[in-house]
Length: 62
Image (cartoon, rainbow, N blue to C red; front, side, top):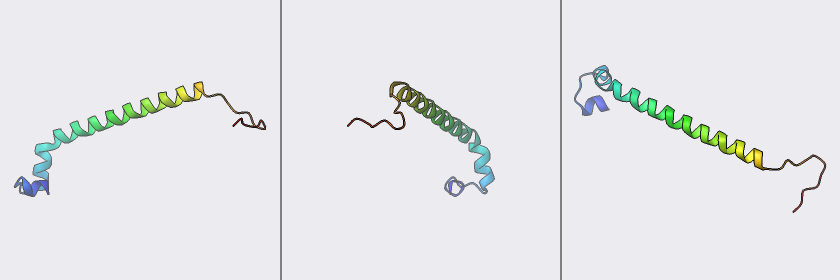
């Protein structure tokens, strides 16, 4: 679709021209996912560290 919009004769022409932008976008996406996972991991570790364990067989207080 982009190649038709840009009036390139082939998709490979479009890819060659804009490939550097796609790598940059992919790199940014990977960094964003990595950051989100690190934050989630730290949040879970903090939650586990501050939540008292419930032993099996002991009634839970309500």
